[in-house]
Image 1 (cartoon, rainbow, N blue to C red):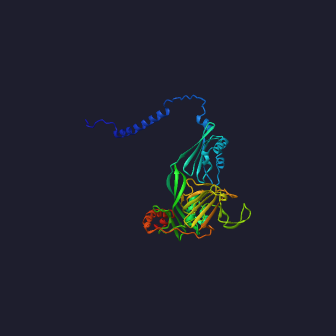
Image 2 (image 1 turned 60 degrees about the horizontal axis):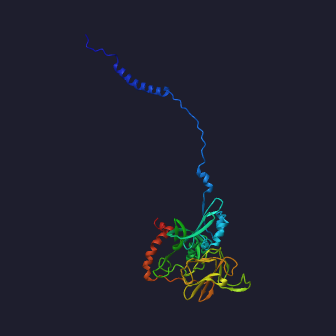
Image 3 (image 1 turned 90 degrees about the vertical axis):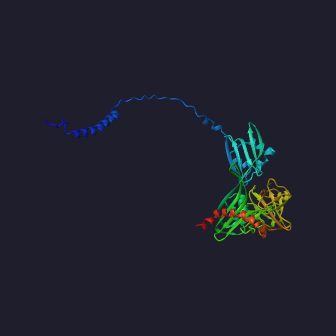
Length: 423
C-alpha cells in the first residue's frame, strides 16, 4: 500500500487558472450589464407657451436720462443744454424770469452741469455747482418748476502731474493738458524765459472734490522745471500772519512779484501806446494791453494787494483795480462778471480769481484790458521789469525747510531725478 495521497494532477496550475478566470468573468459580466441591460424609453412632450414682454423693456422709453457736461470757455447755458439735446422752452423761460436761478447763467469753464431729461428732451432736473460752492438745482413737478440752493462741503485733496515742455515758455504752458488755473500759475512761476526742448515739468496742486469728482483746483503747492542741466523748483509757503509766496530750496523768492498775463489769452489784440480806437475812430493813447480770450475765461489777480475798485466804471465796464502797495496798481476791465465773495476793500493774493473775461463797457469783443501802473503812471505790462518778492527772513527758514522737504521728495519722484540718483 502506498502512503501517497490521491491529489488531482497539476493542482497548482488549476489554482492559477481560477485566479485568472475570476476577474475575467467579472469583467465580462460587467460589460454584459452595460451593453445588454434593459433600456428605458424617454417620453418627450413639446410644450408651447407665450411669454409676456419683460417690464424693464417696456419702461425704457419712460426712464429719465441723466447726462453730465463740462463747461467750456465761452459757453452759455443755452449752448450747454443744446449739447445735451435739451428742448424745453418752458424751463428756459422759468430760469430767465427767476432771480434765484441767475447762477445757471454764470457758468465757469471746467465746472460741470448735469441734466435729467425725458426721452423727448424735457428737463426734470438741472444741477450746477457754482464758484461759491452752492449747488443750484432746478426741479420739475408737472407743469411747475422750483429752484433750490444748498451749500456743498468739498473735500480738499492733492493732485500730481508731470510732462514735457518745449519752445517759448508762455506758449508752452498755455498748451498743457492741465486745469486752466494750474497752467496760469505755472506760467507765472516759470514763463519769463525760454525752455530747452524736452524740458520736464512736475507740479503738485490742490483739488477740491465732491463725491470723488473734482469740482475745482486751488493753489500750486510745488512745481519744478528740469531741462537736464538746470533744475528750478518753487514751493508755496505762507508764514503765520503774513502773505504767502513762492520760494526756492534756499528760501529766496522763486517768482516775480507780479504776473504779466492775468488770464489765459489767445493773442494780444491791442498793444500799449498810441492806437486808432476801434469805437471812437480816432488816435488815442492806450494805457494797457488787450488780451483776447473767450467770454467767461477766468481772470486772476496779477499780484497780492487790496481791491480799491470793484464794480461798474464807465467805458471800462465791469472792472477791478488792485493797489499792491504805495507804488504799484493793476487794472482789469471789460469783465463779464465778478468772482463771488469779493468787494471793494477785500484783500486778494496773487493768482486769486477776481472775475471773468467779457465785453462790457466800451468794447467791440471779448477781451481783458490790463493795465500796470507805477506811481499812478501806466507802463507797458508786457515790457516792464517786474519786481521780485523779498527772500524769507531767517526766522522762517527752519519752518520753510520742514514744509518744503517732503514736497521736494514728491517733485523728485515725479521728474525722475530721485530715481536716477539711486540707479
